[in-house]
Length: 140
Image (cartoon, rainbow, N blue to C red; front, side, top):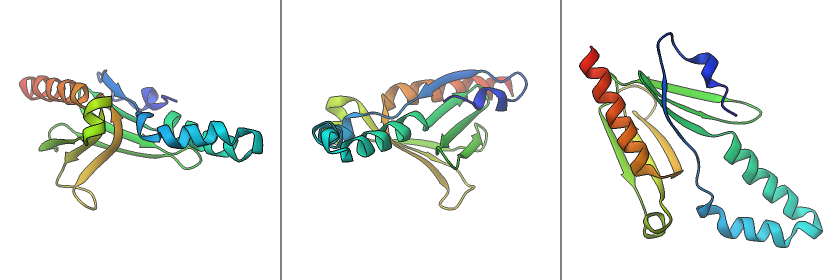
C-alpha cells in the first residue's frame, strides 16, 4: 500500500522504504495458525496482515514520511532540515532477528519525535536516512 508516491513534492525521490518486521509477532502468528480452524485465528492473522501492509516508513530526498492505518490513515512527515537526531533501540531478539525501534527527534509534534516500532533492518534505515540528510544539506 504505497500510496505516498502521489504525495511526493516535485523533484522529491524515494530513497528507502522500511517495513514492519513480523518477528515480534511470531507467537501471535503461530497462535493465529493454530486457531484458524476455530475462525478466531483468521481474525488474528487478518489484524497482523492489515497492520503490516498499512504501515510504511519512507525516506525521501527531502523528508521522512510515516504512514499507518487502514480505515483511518495517518501520515506524518518531517523535513530533513527539521530533524535533529535518529535513535535506534534494539532488544537482544531485535539484534538477532534484525528489527528495532527508530525514533526521529524533531522540535515539532506532541512529544517532539516520530517513532517507528518493530521496523525491519533499522540500521539500513539509519544509513539511508543519514545519506539522504547529508545530500540534502549539501544541496542547500
